[in-house]
Image 1 (spheres, rainbow, N blue to C red):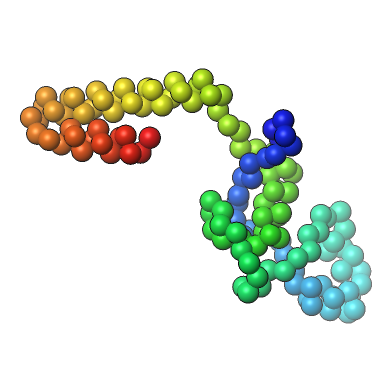
Image 2 (cartoon, rainbow, N blue to C red; image 1 turned 135 degrees about the vertical axis):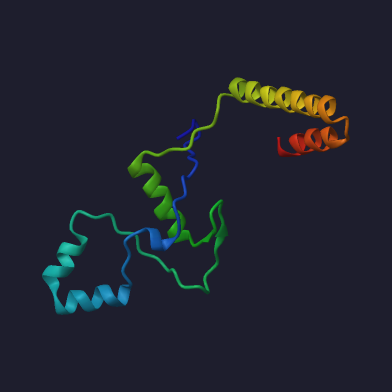
Length: 130
């Protein structure tokens, strides 16, 4: 968590990535086999929510997810302690500057070796990527 209490979620996937059971099936299990129901949920964290296709979804780095799926991913990030951290701004600046220098040298080398305009493409693509 950062100073404001925020966290970057390490997304692992949608509902299929987590053990899940429909409410109807859980209710049927409770009515038919209470002991099995108890064992299924004993010492577990349970998230209850809607997962059908008609509810609104939010765009995430991996796919569009429901609020329940996003909460499951956030909880998974906390439990597994696989946090995403930001680079120190100084290190980030050094990495970007190094990449620019490498792209520049690559473009110059291509120009001297091939005497063509390919170096412009390499340099331009490198700038766009960064």
